[in-house]
Amino acid sequence: MNIDEYIKEQQQLINDHLKKEIKKIEMPLNLYTALEYAIEAGGKRLRPILMMATFDAFNENKKKVIQPAIALELIHTYSLIHDDLPAMDDDDFRRGKPTIHKQFDEATAILIGDGLLTYAFQIISMSKELEAEEKVYCLHQLSQASGFEGMIAGQYLDLKAENEELTEQQLIGVHRKKTGELIRAAVKIGSYLGKATPPQIEALNQFADYLGLIFQIQDDILDVTGTDDEIGKPTGSDEGNNKSTYPKILGLEGALKKKQTYIDLAVEKYNEAKINHPFLLDLINLFGNRSY
Image (cartoon, rainbow, N blue to C red; front, side):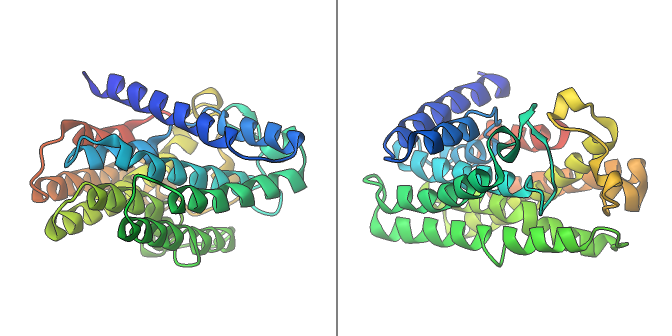
């Protein structure tokens, strides 16, 4: 099996479980329709796949990790829905389809986002596969990554940075919060549930930090070099909003070199963790060279 086959297999597993999870919810039909639209909007499921791949490096019992992975994807989906709102990035399209507030309305988008975030924690708290201590760890990592110390702070800083000239270090700080914390949570939960040793968890935590920066640099590069069809939304939005990005600060060639530096560092930390899971290593290149 190659990395593409592995990705497709994990995507199918995640999508099947997502559909099963939302069918358990008792809610108004029209709200459920919007929820189903949000869940089936075509996400690549990279974050839960990353969590599961990290877990796979230590343990083959996927029953242990699938619900935290689903919870992670629900949180990520919530963040995109709220990011797209008029008060935030004001985007009309996501993954090639109208955003939730365009397909339905703004109030529905806010409620779906709120519901996804809270239901993510409900899934973990009700899991029959996780021990109490494991539930606490997962809840702590995900709430910290998605809250005031993570995505919320990152989104706030990102919005305030419009029309501002950030330094590279300031930009790294924004992206570590907005993008990186949830990626780090994916890796930390996967390694913890898989029973990695503390030194391995720490090495993989640093691996994930670099992976988050790789992901964001490629995001910035795609906004310059990608097409609307490839990334599922209009390109050039960063420049239009006068945002500081890696290509803007370093130039396109400089951004590409910086990405390669982080790829090398991520590989170094992977090796430091002393594991043998080629798919996890392949995800570095996938995050860094994706076209979506």
